Amino acid sequence: MSSLHHFLDKNGLEIDAIIRLRNGKYGLVEIKLGAHMANDAAKTLIRFAGKIDTKHAPVPSFLMVLIGVGTYAYRRDDGVLVVPLSTLRP
Image (tube, rainbow, N blue to C red; front, side):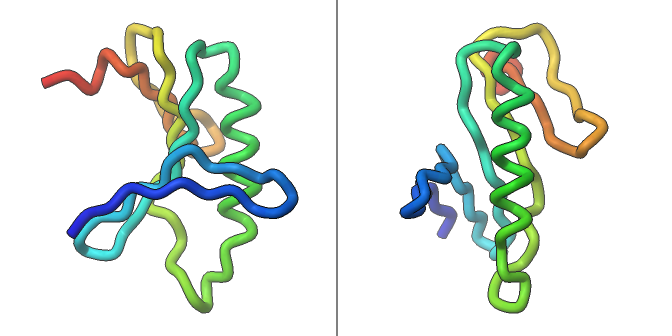
């Protein structure tokens, strides 16, 4: 079964959503209202992904900043996806 989780460590490092798929793959998501916050959110995702002990868990399949407003989704040079909420509609 797929699942959705939140993460907060004792040092205040937080990930808004961890999406785990049935096949064991997962992605990390930071949720922000505007695109102007994407840089800081991407840095948080990259820092968190770098702390994952890959001997015990696989590398995340994707890192994504979900923003409230925007016209298109794109992949940054560092590999982080920036996705406006409106692009997820059916």
